[in-house]
Image 1 (cartoon, helix red, strand yellow):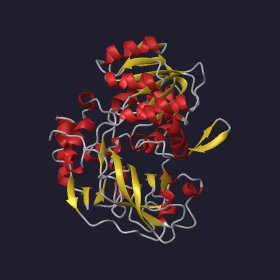
Image 2: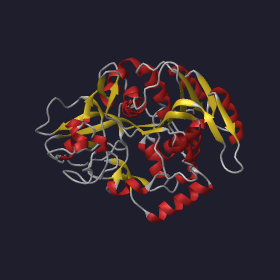
Image 3: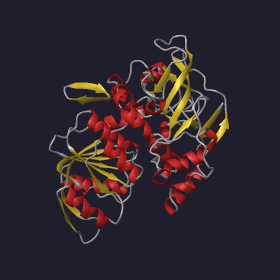
Image 4: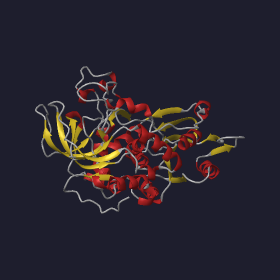
Length: 420
């Protein structure tokens, strides 16, 4: 089968780090250790697994961070090489194991990629998996498959950037007929956004700051509104198309994410009822700010900005995937006694008086939000055009695409794209 496979290469990693510092992301895709290969289909590890042929698979920010050597090496020991990338996937079941229940060949499904104890055949489950937090499983290097925190980072499962992957039956959710593929491929990132949105409970009178309007930022705004948030939402967006989508999803005001620090801080100060005190060196001191901040970028700049523009006693939620941010001043966290929360993947969260699983909630909400989400997905790319796809995903300001996807199923039209 055809697949986009990632292989570890220390020399390429070093080159990518150097290129990233000097030229940024676009050139790095030319030397990234991702190749289109012809490999054997992964085998079903146990009779409780199924085979899926992807229809659409999205390129995640974590994929781009891995390919551009911008991620942290923290997770490297929890993966197994070589792996086929892709974990945001809607597909069709093509084979079922002898012990699989409630699934049949031909079912259209979405993938819950976390490889926890249930998927690994480990009994009894660890404490995280017992609490249905499979994404936080402590046994991600043990069990029926090789190391890997999720599908797309494990050599035994395959991934969405291929013609076939395998998944444990517990990872597979049927997609209701009213949800189109273009919306279904966003269920996984939407569940992540819901997980982040429910990590804080802003009140009607609160000011909420959402930094970044890429896929996760936009879906976080939608998640806030979909779960009943009535606060005023201030969105930091770089591009016109991001502002349009953010307004459609419920953002009230927009703040610039570009320009000089002085320009940015002056604009944010007025909007967020804050006051800036300029220090002799370094970033200014900011008093006041948003009641709740969702950082959906997690770069050095956004962490510095977000901590400063969250008011004393407020809540800062790290939703974006951080790399190894340099030059972050954590003093505002300490001085303002901020409540720092992190949101990785999905799991149970409190919504009002009920506990909800954010993946289940995403699937349910997509029935009503799907038509609004589908335009975020750009025309799909063939696997062979992966360099053009990566370029579109990196250069979203130029492409105007929020979510770049691959189409693998023969019935899905492929966009005509120029080569990079």
